[in-house]
Amino acid sequence: MDTNPFNIADIIAKHFRNEPLDSHEQQALDIWIQSHPKNKLLFDELIAQSRSMKLDWLDNLDEESAWQRIEKKRGKKRRKQFVWRVAATIALICSLSLCLWFLRTDINDEKEAAAQALHIAADDVSPALLGAKIILANGKEVKVDDTLNIASSSAIIENELDFSNESVTRELIFHTLVVPAANFFKITLSDGTAVWVNAASELRFPEHFGDAERRVYLKGEAYFEVTKDTERPFFVETEEVDIRVLGTHFNVSAYGKNVKTSLTEGSVKVINEARSVVIAPGQSAEWSDGDLKVRTTNLQRDLAWKNNVFYFKNDHIVNIANQLKRWYNIDISLSQDVVLHNTYSGEIGRDVNLSEVLTMLAFVSDLKFTLNSNKLLITKQEPMMK
Image (cartoon, rainbow, N blue to C red):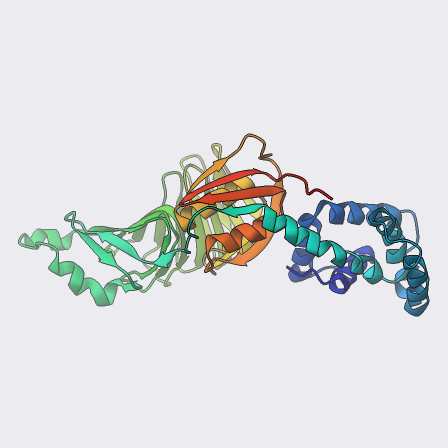
């Protein structure tokens, strides 16, 4: 999170000038606004004031004079209420930088609140590991601890199967890759298609594809980089929809009844019994409540898991809790005082212990996290005593 007040000030100044923000600037601004109620209050106040005045001041600033005025005011009194009242005025004088500088005095308070909002009663929980198991067509289970290439490893699989009946070898033989909670895996299928499989997911695939099509079955979440083959379309079948491609890169999230397909490259057709849609890069097709809708999507968020990052962008706590549950294999309970419709934003790598993720969440939210063994309780954070 970029909490440097001068950087945030420059971003807000660009916003006031109606200059477009790039994705990193917009992300930094959104996270800063969400990180503390006072930030949002200040931003809203500045927006309201900017509507009633010309913005020429942003291009004609006398920062030296502004510093002198602020130093003079700072010498009179340092009460927080006064600082926040002066903040908006400072912002209109020196491109917001001086104003936001005062916010640094509140960062220690926020860190202290985050520390008080995290309680670990037992050992910390480690992040997910690379590993899975394959349930072979004959029911046998093979544990795999490394990435797997079906083409080069087929001999290992075949040794576990009985091909006494030659007709069996002419049929499609399906195996199931099971990636439990607190695990992740990458598999390369017989045609060269690479698949990253998220925690708590299953991928059913054939040892060799047929001549007419390539088809796999997914429960959970996976990212596909499909090898192009114009003669054999590639299908990902879920409980609710089918995804048809020739050669492309896309993510499918199919935990439960809601299915979201997000496209990064190429073209994808999403098919349901009722209708079908075609999406372009940067779009998603979302099946929910019996309807299939195409939307512009946030690929940074959709692909965060594949890039080994927790990236929350205006996410509800239930969605965040589900991600933590799958990645750390923990039981999570929400107390009745937790407001489910509140949203939170934050980012941290997924290769860290659970406590580090909870510290980040406590910093950007009004929630308290109590971890006891593999059980996490989320409650409303008590206000700090001044």
